[in-house]
Length: 116
Image (cartoon, rainbow, N blue to C red):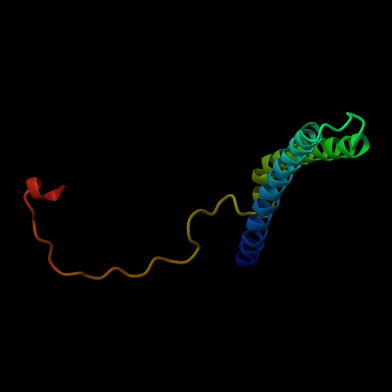
């Protein structure tokens, strides 16, 4: 049972991080696009009214992207609660037993001057 819960967590965690990063990238790309739209209009000596509705929609998309980031931050903060709910807070490190130790031979003492 524990192994299945751990596997579920291990499956979801990288997907969550990927979605989080994609949200950041989408907001970045949107902001760059908005800046380029404004610059292109100015460089082409077009009236300010050109593309206004589209620019407005892009700004709304950027705001939604920023809201999405906030939601991811809030969701990320809930991770410890979820970990506790599925019973993983008591585990740490690898869940597999350590291999038996065996002799590796003799060690040679090296003067400190040669150690670094």
